[in-house]
Length: 270
Image (tube, rainbow, N blue to C red; front, side, top):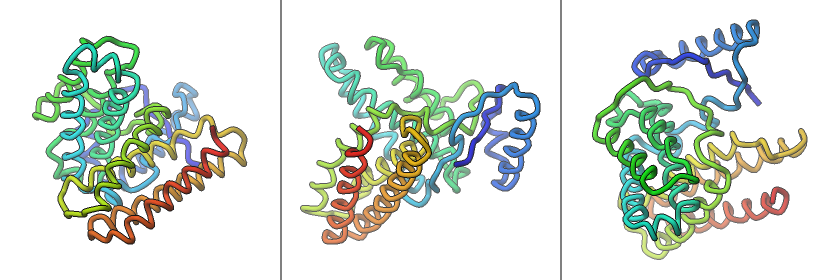
């Protein structure tokens, strides 16, 4: 598994995004060498996505997901009661997913065409912490909305560890939450843009899951975690293709395969 180094200095979004991919890779290698020699930079896992973002989501779909999750948070934060009920579950899931969307936008191969500043969106979502009150959550949501509206301030690094975007509990809960959406689509596929939402979520969460293997245990367990994460990703990509083609039979086949894989993984990693 590759180990990536995140520099302890700020990298402006416009500068880092302007680098061609090959130059970014070489730049990362240089930073790695400097860090190794100096010993001043702590290693982090997967500061670049484990999977190509464009393999499961278009820029339009990522943008749509940011809007969907923002509307979700509007409802969740509408009252003190709704916030208190869901702050450690659905609220955390929505903010975590928005952070993943932001990083997905930053690393999509067509990032130059994005209408939302991905790194800034990620950083805005990450200002929320589930141990804070509703006012803090509303403030974080306000920052998210500002970025979506094109109001970006400060510097935001392009690269960010995928294992620091969403907590594992929230990640797993969000994967489960999307099951009901899939079942509705299978009953009557319409081919609407909104039907890509669970596909995009699963793809992003699959990338974060692959990166977050701290609890996997020994080397053999880590191999199992990586294998099952790859299988989930590959199945999710095929599921997304089937849904976009409105193929109910293929959609259900890959959906069932993904859930069967999750069951096997959970038998090993509780």
